[in-house]
Length: 432
Image (tube, rainbow, N blue to C red):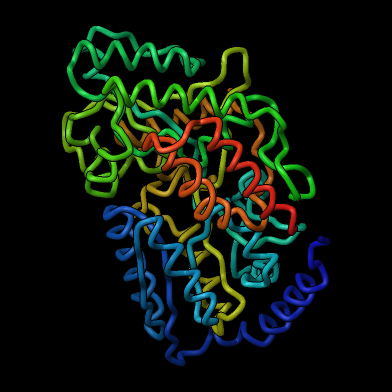
C-alpha cells in the first residue's frame, strides 16, 4: 500500500499556516495550558519535572500539566489518548513507532518551527536529526544519542576472577562468561530484562547483515530464522541451569531499573539502552563500578550495535498550541542550565554546545556513557529504517504473547514459536 504522502503534505502545509498565525502567540501573555507526557525511571521524572518548572518560571503564562509512566504503561496511555484525539502537546516518542504514528496522521511536522527559528538546530549535526524524519519531514526531535549495551558490574567480574570480555565478543562468549560468573559467585550472571527483547531480535538480524523488514515494509527482510532459534535455545539452556533469571522469576520481580538485579547485587550483567545507566547507577548508590559494553555479536557477524535516537519529542496533530510546544522542545534541547539538570539522562545531547558545556561536569558514569557512544560510533552497523506500520501490533500481540512468553515458559518449542511468529507477523506486514 502506498504511503499517504498527500496527507503528510497537507499536514505540513496546515502546520506552516498555523505557525505563521501562531508565532504572535509567543509574544503574548495569554494563559496557556500545555500538556507533556513521557516514560521513564524516577530519576527521569524528577529531572524532567525540574526542567518544566524552570520553563514555567521563564514563561509565567504557560502552565504545564504532565503525566509519566513506565514504558509499557506509557504506550497503553498514549494509544488510548490517540483514539480519543486527546494527546498531550509534547509527547515522548520512540524510533520504533515514529513512522507508524506519522503515517497515521497523528503527528505534525516540526520543519515549520525549525524554519521559523522557534526550534534552533544550528548546533546540531544532521546525523542526529535524520532518525526523526519520515518521508523527508521531521516528526520527532531526538533527545539524545543512544545504543544498546550490556552493563557489566566490574567488581563482580573481579570477585569471580573473570576478565572483562573482548569488546567484539560473541553470544558464544556471553554464554561461556555467564557460566563462569554463576559458578564462581553463586548468583545470576544475568538478571533482567529479558534477553529475548524484540529490540534484541532486530539487532540480531542487523548483525547478520540484513534489515529486519523489507524495503516496502510488507514482510521480513530476511529468510533464515536460524539465528533467532539459536539465540532462544541459548536462553533456555541458561535459564534451565539457573545461570540467568527465568521469565517467571523476572515476572515476580518489581519493575523498573531501580529494582533490577544488578542494582541489588544479585546479578553481574544487565541489558539496557545506554541512557538508562544513569538511573541504574543512581539507584545502586556510591561505590559501584559499572561499565557499558558492546552487545554480543554473532560469530563472524557484524556489530549488533547501532546509534539510535534514544527517544524523541513530537507534537501531535491535535495540539492547539504547537508554537508553545515547539518553544518548550527548543528549551529542552538548547538551554544550558536545563541540560545541567537533565544531564544526558536521556542520552548524549544532540547539541554540540550542550555537550561541550556538560563534559567538564561529567562524573565517572557520565564519562563512561559519552566514551561508550564514541566507541560504538567507531564500531557499529548503520541503523535500519524506522519500524513499519504494524510494529506495535507485532510486538504486543505476536512477539510477546505468541512467541517470546510461550517459548521461555517452556510451553512450545522454539521452532514452533518462530514459525508462528513469522506467519502472524508477516500477515500484519502484508497489509502495508
